[in-house]
Image: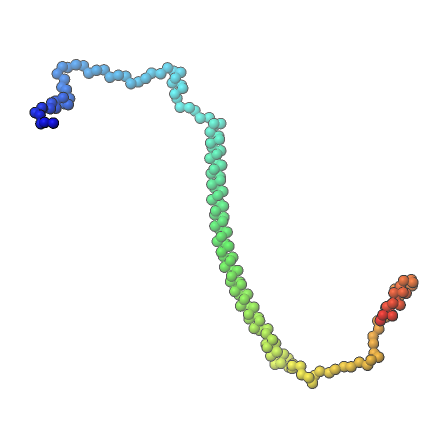
Length: 166
């Protein structure tokens, strides 16, 4: 491509000047006229209560479910707080129980009982001098007499067997 001396005519891109006074072209009417039947079809549809009823009911059901869920969460939070308080009370009560049990065991130990018996009641421990043995003669025996239960031959048989075995 060689360098050529062609000039560009920028006048082609400039708006043309009107030299003649022509009347401006009439603007088109953009309004579309529709017949009355089509006008009724294009109007906004009227919503009837029966058509909106399923939508309203579904919205109410969803709102009720959300409310029940939130209420349940609030109840769970309140119960968790009260459970924490009760758990703390239980821990404290168990601690007090352990302390009282240890104190009771310390007061009721065998040594404490022995000291109380010796010092307060004047008792002594058992020694061999305090033991007395009792011997029975060989002829001593006890016998339990049962009143006669009946005069039948069976009762007499049973009583004779008892006397024989005693």
